[in-house]
Length: 187
Image (cartoon, rainbow, N blue to C red):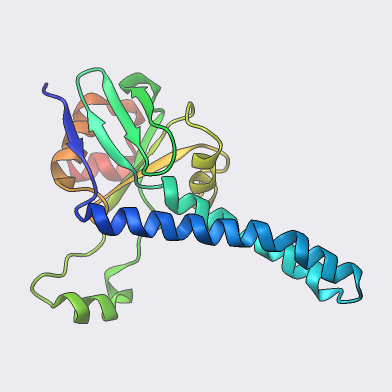
């Protein structure tokens, strides 16, 4: 199999949004000590604000790693986020392939249908790969996706060009025993 890259369909938009997210994370982390200082000076609600500021960094950090570009070859895949370092994963290191639950349902995307147009609109679709070897930031996505502390990445039709081809390659190269029953029914 030839090495194939499955990147974001709009790479410039993706890079800019990743940088904006990191600016937001930096702002929240830098503002937290000041909120704590204001809490000590008599504004007890600032302690709560500091806590929530730190909690808000979690979904922001998740968005930097949840649907990275992926390079696929015979041995496995390489996860290539915009900001963080790449990780090479062999096919046997993937412990589960499941539907990705954090995508919006089609009936909740009225504004997107209007913006894109009914003809061009495609409902969000995706799978997630549970990969225990990935670093702690990928565990944030696992937590929000209901996988507890398991690291995950998402493969979606909105974040990956040639989405269908990528899903078929993943389902073909991974052990069918780790595929979710819902995915087996769609085959």
